[in-house]
Length: 472
Image (cartoon, rainbow, N blue to C red; front, side, top):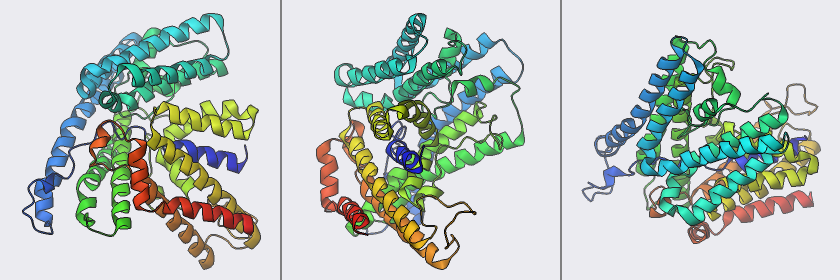
């Protein structure tokens, strides 16, 4: 796989929001009691927004973390039969699914159950192509449910959890095709994996082998507690940033590009909240001990997104588990048909897994064009000037004359990073956390209206970037 293929796949698929719409706490609570003044003091912000937001957030995530701990304590503290482990995993997962989704959870259970029976049936006749078959069936089921059986509001709440089920089912089918699994999981193993309490609501996606590994010589140490504590604190921090701080620093009457940056930052912060929460819940269940360092299970890395080197870097670190899933089960399996077909297939799968959503499709398509223009331009400039200004950091032994630490190279990379931040503000402005449309998903008119206010500046800039590349 050449560098462009890899970068382009990262971009097309990892930028998609996956779990952030599962839980969005009440926003801007301090506005409800505003006394009409133009500013709000920090003490008022703390009392009217931050404290209620943290209280509401802890009320939800506290139950999730409690059940994750109970699951691990009952299955990994002492040696218990495997059947008990998988049963407790599924049972605690059902409790959490009911807490977050109530009766709508039955769509998730029905999907998971039906998918296993179909996978078992297909495996009786085929030893290959089970992954593609389950992929088509899973995507078809999600689309049919969205169109015919579930209201838009209810579907918008559970689509992230449904995506997780689909990703787990498809990964099991492909692993069976690849020979990574000698046989299909038993019903108990399968349902324990799919409904595992630490990953069934907020994610992240984890491979089936990682689920089995949590029962194999589980570790209990201070590093485990430290990683959980740090992840929870980071999640709560970004929850307050998304809900309170962004609107306090940048009011509604600010310059339109500042408000665009504010809304995009608020959206990104809500994604970081869910990402760190998913890290905490998964690690609390025992995931991450197969990696080095121990109990490391990165989902998103805000430092590489908020201060980007390139858009490629942004999308790689936006959702690392989903990036790995798409790279392993979509791009690599379609690569023999050619790079273009593989890229197109990966984009299509990413879009369809998220549902029939014009907003997400528009963002993905735009990012595809942006990243391509950025990649080819920086590659050509790096070749012409012999400088380390590619979308990814160069190796220390690269052939470029001007290395990363040279002042001119640093300034150029900073400029490209600023351009990436500009694109992120433009693309993220449509994910307005305070808009009532978020309860059922955003339509095309909302998307185009948000971009038209900014005169489609980012799209025009990307077009100019590509034309400049063609001219030099």
